[in-house]
Amino acid sequence: MLPQGRVPYGRLAAFYFFYFASLGALLPYWGLYLKDLGLDAGRIGVAMALLSATKVLAPNLLGWIADLSGRPLAWVRGVCLLAFLLFLPMLGADRYLEILAGILAFGMCWSAALSQFEAVTLQYLREAVARYAWVRLWGSVGFIVAVLGLGAALDLYGPWGLPWVVAVLLLLIWVTTLLVPEQRGRAGQGGEAVKWSRLLWRPGMVAFLLVVFLIQAAHGPYYVFYSIYLRENGYSGSLTGGLWTLGVVAEILLFLLFPWLRRWISLKALWLLSIFMGGVRWLAIGFGVQDLWILAAAQLLHAATFAVNHAVAIHYLRDSFGMRHQGKGQALYSSLSFGLGGMAGSWLAGVGWEALGPQWVFAGAAALSLVAVPLAFLVRVR
Image (cartoon, rainbow, N blue to C red; front, side):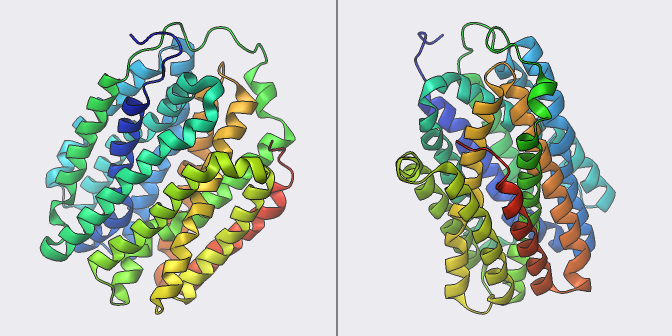
């Protein structure tokens, strides 16, 4: 047990490192793995949408349980162990229905863990919430390590060993949760007496949830088909990994600079600019795939489209829900953005990829980003 007020930065960072390393294995390369198994674009889109769909129910269910029990870390440990165990059948799965069942089983647990660990991290940081970005950036580092390593391995060996890599990473995620100490006191006790329903059904909160849904839906074609799009246009696995890495390096730099940026630019202005830049990014990828420099510039915008949006969302949720309802608030954000938004974006991308073509799928993603801009004006971000 750590002394009161002591923050285990290294152990918190280790969880983010391995969790986002697993994401770095799944997002850029799982679609390639499924294509290697013989699945078409429509089925790949459904499979990836199902993984996003697990983020709709699972985080909310665990959020309510964790807030009521006051022991979010214990529940995180349990679901991380289950995620590893339920993924093991995927090591030999090669039929479509087997793959869908495996994604659903492990994804329910894997998806539930992150939002509750975010609540654990915020509980430790308390008034030092500005340092959240410096803890979270280690997730970006883990993502880079996975993307670069697997990109090189893809060129040499192909994607057949990807499930084994994911299994090892899931095991390491669980191990890191055992290293983080339980906090003294109950997270669900004390604090604000305001009811959850009153906090939830405010006009600004509804607009915020619509905005983060649209932002993540716009990311759908990128997360599911970006690597496939690059391969179809002659880019190697190493170069594909390099482009993914460039985006995450930009993300890391943003997280490092975020406390400084807040002193000079309001969160609202940063947020509005980042949402608008999402539209620019998706158009650049869709129509500039033949030009490496355009793709590189678009990847630098990942600092805006993901890092700024996520950092602003974490601050907004902390201010809006306090610690009493933080678990439920983080779960709601995760489920409606990364869950429902990611599911809708992945499914629509799969439907339109062959019917409309990649360029117009990314144009649709740009349109979703631009629709989110006027809605963001209704959100009171401080």
